[in-house]
Length: 245
Image (cartoon, rainbow, N blue to C red):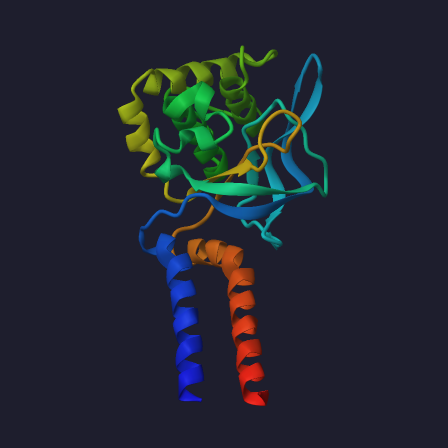
C-alpha cells in the first residue's frame, strides 16, 4: 500500500506542478480548452448594415462559467448561442515573434496590433471609460474599435469617439514592436483563445481574463483534469489486474 500511495502521489504531484506553473509566474501557451458561447452580451453596436452583439459575452470555458466573460476581436466570423468549439489559450504576456502566427491575426496586425487590441480589451474588462483625453467611452465603442483594428480595411460606421480611440492606441505603439512586447509582457492575466481550426467560417477568436494566483491555477488545472483522471484510473486498473493475477 505504501508503494501504491507513493506512486499515485507522484503522479498527482507532477500533474499539479505542471498545471500550477502559471500561478508562480511561468508561462504556459498553447493549452487547448473548450469554449461555449452561452448567449449573453453586455451591449450592442450598430452600423448601416445591422446590429451586432458586442461588449463582454457570457461563456463557459472547459464547462465552467467564466467569471470574467469573453471578448471578441473578430468581426469576420459569427457564432450563435450554444455554439461550442475548441481553442488554444495563449497568455498575452507570452506573445512574441515566434508564436504570433498561432493567433488569428498575428500575421496581419503583428505584435503592435495585438498590443492595441489588448489595451482596449483591458479597458473593457476593467470598466475603464477614459483613454488619454478621450472620455465617456462605451463598451460598444471599445468593441467596434477592436474590430476596426483586426478587420482588413477597417470597419465601416465607426463613430467619432471610436475613431479617435483607434487613432490613439495606434499612435501609442506605432511600429515599435519592442514597446508592444514590453506592454504585452505585463498582461499575465489576459488570455487569447484562438479557435482550432482557425480561419474563415470558423468560430471567433476571443479574449478572457484569469485573475492571478489560484484562479489562474484552476483555469489550467481544469483543462488537465481529464488527463489526470485517465492516468489515475488506468493505474488503478493495472494494479487490480496484478492483484487478481
